[in-house]
Image 1 (cartoon, rainbow, N blue to C red):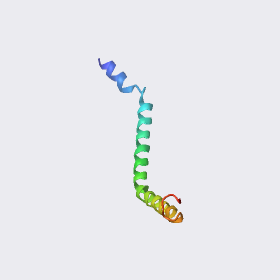
Image 2: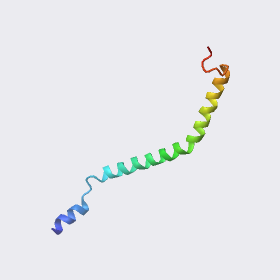
Image 3: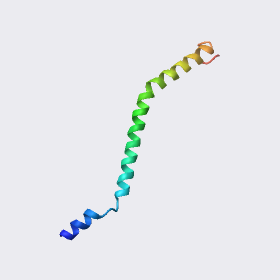
Image 4: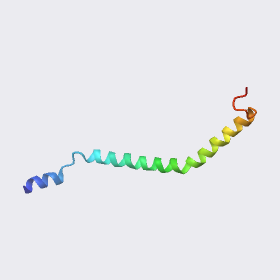
Length: 64
C-alpha cells in the first residue's frame, strides 16, 4: 500500500496535460477580458461607420 502511494506521488504522467489545460484556460480568460475591454469602443466605432454610410447615401436606407 505504501509503495503504491509512493509511486503515485512520484509519477508525472499527465502532468503535461494539466499544464497545457492551465495555459489554455489562462489564454481564454485574457482573451475574454480583452474583448470586453474593447467591446464598447468597437461597437461605437461601428455605429459611427454605419451612420456615416447612411448619411452618405442620403439617409434613405438604400439609395433608391
